[in-house]
Length: 245
Image (cartoon, rainbow, N blue to C red; front, side):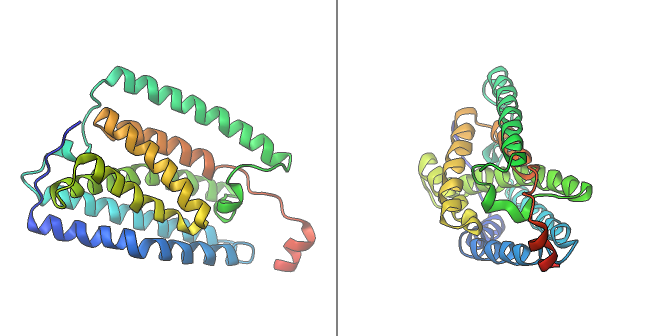
């Protein structure tokens, strides 16, 4: 895979501001938002609905800035942002189907564990975001899909192109930097979240570099996000719930 993005001055400014926020502001803002949700989740019926609404707004704003960066740079091709068909479409389609099957299978296993009151890996770190009503579930799916598309466009497509075209980095150095920025976004889940995001970011970035397209990483990201955000919320003891209310 090779890219040769040519950022204009306006595009550079837009991307630099967004990248600075993602690296320095997003980890703390995301942590505060999640901690606020966790405090209000059991006492405000629509706390999660409002939280999901804000998350959707932020992600579409970030995606819009990424598209603006592309449109403001006439010398940059959409393929430089990963907006192209994979180098080997047949293999990519097979990989998408395989990833979907794995996500469905693991999701069923996680749901069974949750219903039995057993430990589900990583569940505690996102417990406040798990839906309890039909409306929350619909919004959770919307957030999962938006997260998969937006995160890959911004963290993989835009930031790697920025690293190559503006910072003058080698493609793989730019990719490593994008993984670092993505990893700190997991700070809202604590330091284990940072490690988990670093691992996932490495996987998504590897898929992007291997195919030259965001199609496969977007698909895998969406599958995993939908799986996680549609897990059943743990049952709370009646006494504790009544005390919270």
